[in-house]
Image (cartoon, rainbow, N blue to C red; front, side):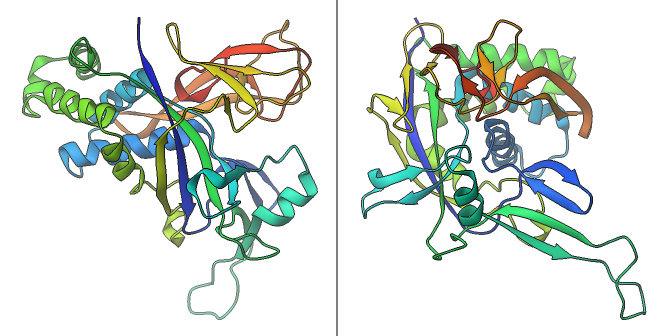
Length: 319
């Protein structure tokens, strides 16, 4: 039986975070949370460059990304405030609980435009406004954090990470010659993954150097991992019971509560709320060259009409 460990992770927001949601006229809206796939994408990029340097070979990113998806599970990150001086005093805030108060406190926006070359005037049609999760509360200037959880598979003597990485590398790189050109890439990836899974401090250091979301050309997306500690509480976010036994971690959403992540939609699922297609770009040969459709899901905040138990799948989706 696979053994999973659970850690609570807290990021200090250093600069505005924009997680692309939708565009309305000249307003680029942000999601009021950070999806697990955003964290995994940032960690994949960081870890791949740590192992291989500043490579642009998308196949290496895919091997590392698939390995992270297999051996870790991230929940979504929500804005949090520090309730006391101890790390355990962080409290997450959700956009569906008190929407007006939430958006007033945690979401800001920035307006910019392009200038016409040689003319001190705005370029026509270039005015746009981008929302962001603010590093400080908009009303009383308190530091804002992001709170979530990460599950990791135990990697002891029976760990099969080396076998998984080798099979993934052969499948993705399509030839042994490609593997040899990276000086035994599977062994290098599996060694780093073992270290990451067995040493929380190493995972914390990698998470401290990620950048989350878009608009990073403006210096946005900077975070610092200030806490990564094994979690022994009974409920995630003090709301959702969980279970580490079995083939993978599960999460229970109580009746009349709200989804804390995207939940794969089905006609019989007793959930009320908006749905959206899960679409993302993937490294295949070059950056973002492949569009991947993961299905249709209820958005976070959907109301659950009866108690439901979900598996926490790759990319943090509930199913």
